[in-house]
Length: 260
Length: 316
Image (cartoon, rainbow over all chains, first blue to last red; front, side):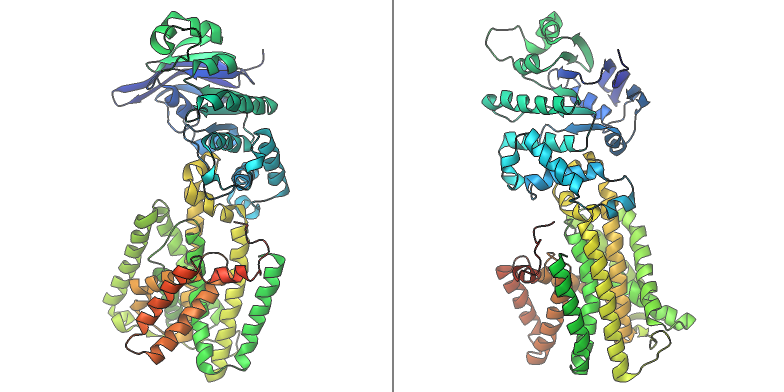
């Protein structure tokens, strides 16, 4: 087996006397799709924020592609190939869908120097081509000329994830990709997202509350409780775990959507 | 500027330069001041696009003007081009330093902090007796690469210098606005979090804009000082800053050219209003702004766009 793309060892985060995360040790091989479950306050978002450099861990190490990224500022981590989407879609409302993606693609391709930013045009041939490809890949091409402010919720989420992908990341962290999306649309949305990410060979960690979606789309599930990982394995095994059922998903009721 | 825009802008520039041969002196001196102020407005437009409004832009205007006046007085340098560059550089340097603080603030806090800086400068100048206190002092008569004109010829030479500086500044700013760093103004205004997580430093983008507008403000002040022949602390007073913001609203941030059109319209309306209604000229000026906001919410500059001079008007 090749070296893991992401390797987290003994990670911990304290806010004063509150322990938000402790003893997290996880390693993720390239191109795996990992679901992250847990109730509110279990430490899922803290975990993601530490990987993306938004929060500085108080303990432990994070390695990405065998490089130590612990405590690096988020911009540098983004530049190295880790990208994220948000629970509430973070887009540019007064630009069109196309310009949103094109801006993201241009930033991703620009040299990371001051003069590079001044010399690179917003709409270069490559950034336009990349934007066109992503619009097709995420199936939002028919919204291309709409202002992002006027988009329905599901399209906003797709746009947000599309923008995260425009920087050509190798690891993508999705924070609740289906939150705010109606139950009928959720599966379809995840289907589009996951096939797009597979197409790009991106390793994915996604936080999700809907157990059916986790079961359907994750190859592996990490269950968080009280700041640490209490179960780690295939969806079937993790969701069948007694502690996971007691603390997170509840006993499985046939046909019902387990929600926490 | 699209190709058509460049041609239109060049013809406008040539027409403005040629106008010096036919127009009366008072119009030329009015236009000189208007275009010098237009540089300051251009700087405000650069920030405006990123959602920032500075109520202290007069500080850079004043720094540029005093730098020219002091260098003329102390060193005997009289070359206008050198003086304008030094004036711009001094203001640019100050904007770079205060930018480390200002780039962290947004909206009303940014506006008030920039206002505070400009009023500190005003206060210092008013208390400095060696610089003439509230009276200010006069500026040397400039030369142009060894050529030392007088009277009408000086007026025309300064006018052409202002046109040349404005043309170069407009071209460079236009190129900047089309670059990634410049075009990200709207994304920065819309959503800083997203810009940061795409891997771009928002504070550095904003800091760059502050320095650009400081440079432009300083050059505008330097040219105004040479044209008026006198500097005083009122150049840094908040009403001066307010006037620049007024012109920016009048002009709109749609294109680079609108800064100069707006400034020229403002100076003309003010002169005519003052001549016609000495008691009520401010009311007339206010009405013009009100009408502009009501009927041309994107500013006078949007007229240029509507005339179809810019084919790629949609490019942010």
